Structures are given as C-alpha cells and as structure tokens.
Image (cartoon, rainbow, N blue to C red; front, side, top):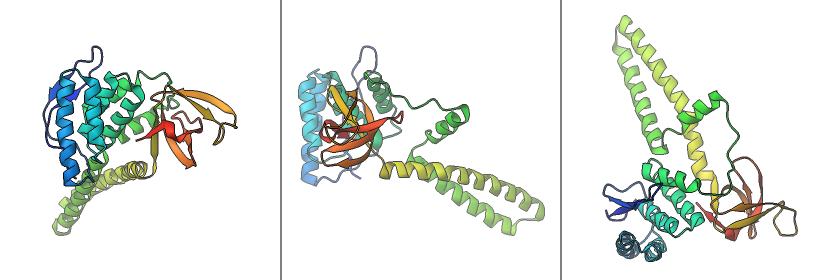
Length: 269
C-alpha cells in the first residue's frame, strides 16, 4: 500500500464550514497506480490543496479529479476531493467520495464527521427500522472497531490463549485453576468477536453500495421505464446494490425498500 506524500489536509466542519489544515500520517490507503501516475497524482494533489486554501474550490475539485483519474486510491485524496465538491454544492458526488474515504479510513474522525454532516443535508431520510435495546447495544459493539483493529485483537486473544494454555501445563494445581478460568474468559471474548469480524469482512468483500449523483432519480419496479414508477429518490441517497442487469441496478434502501434505477446515475463506493 502506497499513500500520497504527506501534505496539507483541508477539512470542512459543520455550521460555518471553516476550512483548516492539519498534518499527520496518512490513513490506510491503497494505490495500484504506477510510479509515474503516482507522481502526477501527488503534483495535482498539492496544487489542489493550494487552490482549496485560496477558496478556489472549482479549481481544487478539477485538480483532485485529475489525481483520482491517475488510478490512485487514497483516503486523503478522496476526503479533500469530497470537501471541494461539497463547497460547490455537489452533494451526491461529495457523499460518494466521503464514503470512499471512509471505506479506506474507517477510524478517521474527520471523515466520519463530514460524512454525517453531508448525509444530514440529503432530502431523503430512509433510516433503518429502530432496533430494540439489545440489538442496539450489540450493533454498537459491532461498529466500535474496524476490520484491522478486529483482526489484531483476535490475533492478540489467540496468542494470549496459547500462552495461558502453555503456562497451565507447567503450573501447580491452584494456579492451573486460575489459568483455566482466564482461558475461559479469553476464549469467550474470542468467540464473541469472531462472528462480528466475519460479518464485517463479508460486508466489505460482497456488499456494494451506490450513491445517487443526480438531483432526482426514478425508481421502478423492474429494469426499465416500462415498469411501474415506484418513487423518486434524491441526490446523496445511499443504496445497497443487489445486482446489475444491463444498464439497470437492483437496489435496496437502508429501510428495506427497493427497486430498479439507472446504473449510470449511481456512483459506486
């Protein structure tokens, strides 16, 4: 994984939308780009940051787009591009690139903050059904860590389990009882973590999301305008893409409702 060279990061805040700069290590990112393409992307990225600082958001967006077109996948690039798009009132594309940044850097608080703020500006509010208290608590625990953090935690728990088992072999009777109890607790934690981690990995590997890019988008009961018009959805709305068929996508909203929309009007996360 190769990130863009460390550079200024501008980010948008709610109420007033004050732009600021911060420096720090790059979030998790991946780039299949060649060294030449990466060099061009880095140059465009630096120029775009300068344009953003000068409040020339149109030029900044154009330059960030040039960097994206080089095939670079980088959380900072997507994040800054989303900020410029948001400043230009292009809500759908901005949410798309906040989502892309969040996918690469799920623990980044700035990305998560701006994504929540941008989502709050959308017309369509399609929340998932309100879960009961137990489900809400379990989902909160499930959402509290990234895949990377979960994998490292699972590895640490497994290593701890092995060490405890090894120590129990040579321990006396009294200490062995304590070690067995500790092994039970560690094993229980590992058993509880495994399903959540497996679900996260499955989501990342198999689920595909789309963002509505145009101001309004018709949703039909089948893959074509000859089917029944179900509703209209608006810019920034997020779908799960169930399948694609020709130029159409079968999609499902977070509230479970679904239909078919034109694939060309969606941006894939």
